[in-house]
Image 1 (tube, one colour):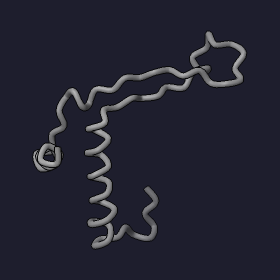
Image 2 (cartoon, rainbow, N blue to C red):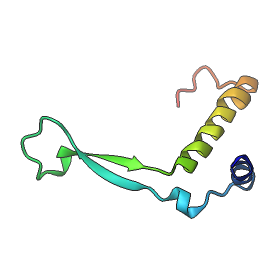
Image 3 (cartoon, rainbow, N blue to C red):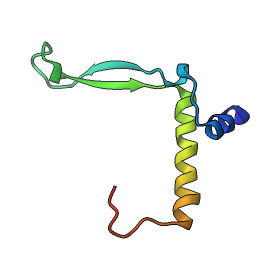
Length: 77
């Protein structure tokens, strides 16, 4: 799996099947009328592999890139 994740990062390509997510609508508690769209909260169920690659890239940015080149003090995004 490590080799596959490294190849995905090196080539900058994520397989289409990993990028596909399923959206489930969960009803919000305390609503009286569930015929309205606002009565539901969408939850995206993503692939475990995509989440893993995303976490590896995030950790690389936070631990390596930002320690060498920290953001400007006025950068807020």
